[in-house]
Amino acid sequence: MQGCCRIARPRAGTPALSPVAFAGLLLCGALCVAGSVGGCALADEVPGTGGETSGTGTADSLEGTPTTDADETTGAEGTETAAAGSGGGEDEGGSGGSGDSRHRCGDGRLDPDEECDDGNLDDGDACLSSCVSAVCGDGVEHEGVEECDDGNAVDGDACSNTCADAICGDGVLWLGVEACDDGNTDDGDGCPADCGVSWCLDGVLSGDESDVDCGGSACAPCVEGSWCASASDCLSGQCASGVCVAPRSCQDVLNLGLGGTDGPYLIDPDGEDGDADAVLVWCEQSFAGGGWIQVFHYQKPEPGQVAASEFHAALSKAEALTLVSPLHTSAAVKSVGLPLEELHDVAFVWAPSSAEDADHYGLISAPNGLEGLCVLEGDCGANEPAVTAEVEPGGASVEVAPADTAESLHVGLVDAEGRTLWGYDPDSAPEDPWANWSLDAPCCGAAHDDAIALPGWRYAIYVR
Image (cartoon, rainbow, N blue to C red):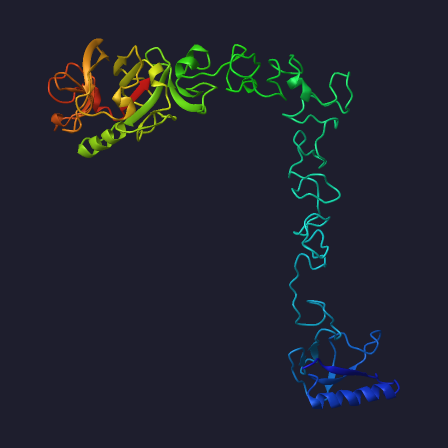
């Protein structure tokens, strides 16, 4: 059904209905009876509206106060919610009474919480889809106004703080691309027409290069052996005494003066020409002359066969070289990626705490390299050959071999007498089954002294 048919009636003191109005009233009544309109009313005229009400007024209904799908008339209060096209129009929440008062961004009406509303949800014009005015730095390119918008107001990148593309000659140094920018593209004034890009290709030391065609603010980093002013000039990120260096080991870090204290350092075991990336490792620089890479660490385990099995499982795996902290237990020996054939020393250490250097250890030297030493490669089996270890404390030379874990729960290194010098020995039960290189201990069991009772001791393996 259609909306309410209404004819304004004259106010008191005005002439009677005109013939046209009277004919309209008759037609409205006929339509009401036929059911083609939802209701008929003779409404008071409101001055200035051309004889129609605004959606709020007093109506004398011809057929009571029917309610239709399109409008509602409340006889008690005389308040009418008109359908679209009646006095209230399409004004949501306006004087039409119970209309929908919810506004939304993009409806073309400016609400109190909107900076703008252009009737669309198009980003790229002066009013964003969030009904916020477009500005430089908002991360949305304003079409026809901005050349770029990278979401910041920073000069020195590809988009200036005026939202213009960075170009040579704009007077703003484009970091990492331009070596200079004097606001023009003229040669002969100290900054070339290409803003110094050609300096990195001219075969001579120019601009702020640290070496020929490398380093500085615009050119690529320099390779090992090139001159440098800072670490950023070097591909390795290491500048020592004005020269780019690429330490391949903790020994290099120490020898090149890059670090003499224990801690994490970046090394590149296969050099800049190798396939592997540089890796962060823990360097022990205060132990036995320094230059050691820590590849295994184990906090004091609890007594028992479960701990022995876990310790054995960790020692039986070799994984990629990575940072092994003295504060955490290793799940494997982190030696894969090291050129073991170029390393010659390995130390199996016991330290009283994570904060203290090892004072009990066995140091094994291999003039032909550490390649093939099973403990570093995670594949020790039965009857591994013995090697000589220089043991501290005491300074004695002792023949040691990996424990035969295939036939017993012995884990670590044992001597010819059957004592476990580093690791776990079940023959020590009920005494503490963990060893710490104490050569004064009797056979057979874990060779340890009273320091084994310390609460925070640790095992570690160092190589250099």
